[in-house]
Length: 134
Ligand code: CO
Image 1 (cartoon, rainbow, N blue to C red):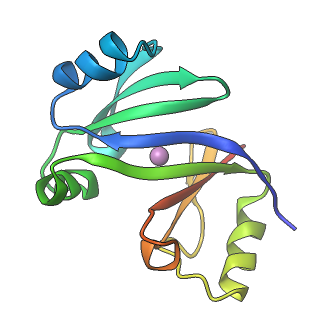
Image 2 (cartoon, rainbow, N blue to C red; image 1 turned 135 degrees about the vertical axis):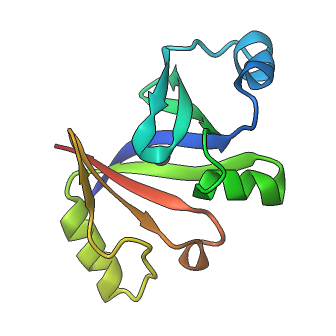
């Protein structure tokens, strides 16, 4: 059976990085580890470590991404929660067997990691990302 190791990150959709940092960094006191352009997700991401996890501020750089549409609809906010698992393929087949609706039936392979999303219809409305470091 696959296991969840920790919350890897919580992603927050933002339309403006500078004004978001006014709260998350300046008022709340989170430290910015780095800000990165992530072309594969058409977004710019601010990585802010919190213990063993991270808060990520995701700022879409293109209007045709899921995050951009989410901001258009909701004005930003918590976008997804990411669990790091020890075996994502095993986790996906276990979830499938339990009739959980998946966005990605098989894990997407990226350099250094595999990932997949669970459909919010199965998770009380929370978009859940699964992540395995490889
Ligand atoms: Co994520």
